[in-house]
Length: 431
Image (cartoon, rainbow, N blue to C red; front, top):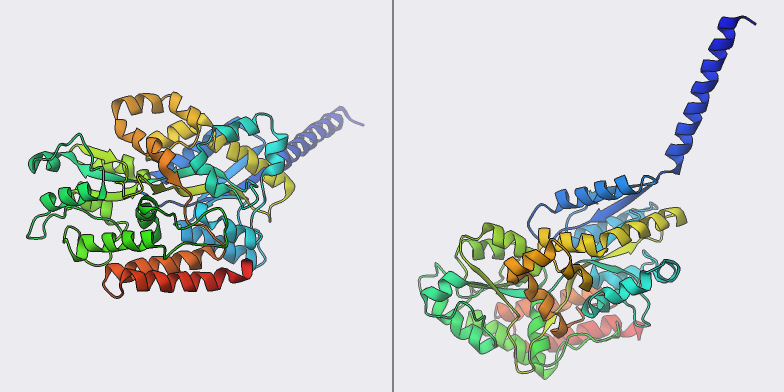
């Protein structure tokens, strides 16, 4: 054998070995698809892409493909369509927290018990989440199915400059329903160019009203996913008051107020007080050319009250065990105190871990802009968001009842009695 041939064969062998090593390395990288929605303004896609790049760099054996999948309803429908069509869907996704029982019923997700039990420090991490945010991660037996991520409560935003203009104390948010009504009367202009108050009644009509129901005396749901409390006297009273703000007192526009239009109406000065998610806080502060006040949802006769909201991280059942393990590591990263602190600063969502509030940059931000602490401080008064079996249908039933009263189509008692009967009929097979 010639010397030249030996050299050539050696080169080929080295190249083949290198190619084999590359294939092995490529095969060892687990790719997972992550679907996420957004329901607030701001550069959410850019933020998530940055997190994925950080995670991928620190975990070379995993590659996260982050996919923006629309709003909460769109992401649920996309997963449902993919899985029902024989596909696998994503490996990990953010679903609306109230979709939990629909996800369980359709066998889309897995419980996280084994991961929590087998991961060092996981139980301590679970204890670090605000208890109110854990309520919508649990089934009726206390099993954890999701991990809080982009969580929120609704809060009241108010224009401090306009408060000064009409003689209201800008440093004191309206404390009660009556305080809010009286302030809104002073802030409303008779020509319709400025409304004292705007509370959205589309998109999530049940959600913002749920704060009225809780503070009036009774939440719409308790621990069981098979029972709702739509037509209690306190909820009827709360809906009557809610509808009166536009129909009787004329401090809100009549008819259905759009969710997406409300922050813009506030920052443009067309509305002096609004209810919206705390997830809109960063965007509102960025766009307002006035001093923004943030307060608890005003209290009714039973005190303060608000629902929690937003989305939780879930692992899909259609993924392989290896992909599920990788998804769990991604969930641990996103729900870490460091990322939660950063996420809260960049979006306005409430950092779901208590320890995150002691970290930078969130700690300094709260010192400079105390508005960011309001939703956190409201959490002791927050209760479980409306979540049941047949959840989307049940929420739509209640939302349509709220809208029917707002538009004057029905009185509160009739609408809520009908909603209760319709929901009971849907939930009866689950009892």
